[in-house]
Image (cartoon, rainbow, N blue to C red; front, side, top):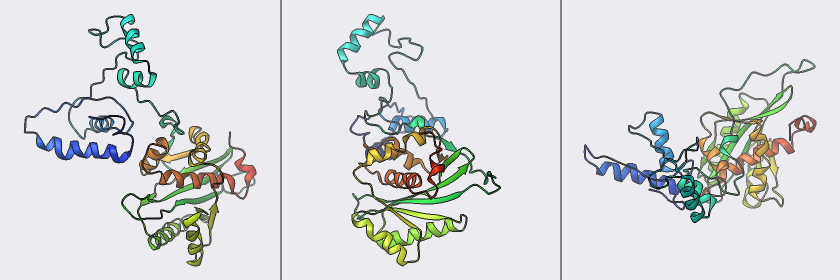
Length: 312
């Protein structure tokens, strides 16, 4: 059903999924038996999507999984490889560990340059109430909205992405709660301005301090200027400097892994997809907006000694 090239981007994975659901399955008759065979090439591959649908009882059927060697070290293909020597001969014939893991052991192997791993993602169910801190004051709360505006609305262009994050002070440091009101769609410049104002105003009703974070480069320079003209004063501009996108994402890795950046159970699926599979996804706009908001909270917070209490 799939190969490495077809699973490399979300668009490719969606096409395979839509082809199966929209053309293959409807072409069958009442008693048609559907058997889908393949390897697990991606966390979001067709087979993994079908596995999830079966677990959630969305579809009927069975998901059967037969790696050459299971987790207990037992060979499940004894007719072809009756002993350990035969397995070792086959492994050396393949001569590539990634291929061996994918094709024989049915493991999903991340890219060598993967920045964030799926098992590092930590979730929250609800945001706690403000804490009573030392000295009698309430814990500091601040919402920042990372924005990565797109230049074009064409069908191949990037999306305009907006990722809000809540900085929450605790007695041992700070946590960043990624909020589920995430924007990721194609917008022209006036629509981007309007959307920024709407999301800004929506959080101002709940939190005293709300800031927008935009990169101060190229076309994006016009956005903070226009927002200020339109009355949105709390706009922070950042500059990526000499660091590439991946390097900036890597700076957030320890915070994600240690649970100091938390994600909602629902509403951030596409964001998580982009940061976990950064470099192979067709679009990375949400990942860029995420980096903007997290790194701005670390770099530009008005009380940096508290930030330093994070366990880097």
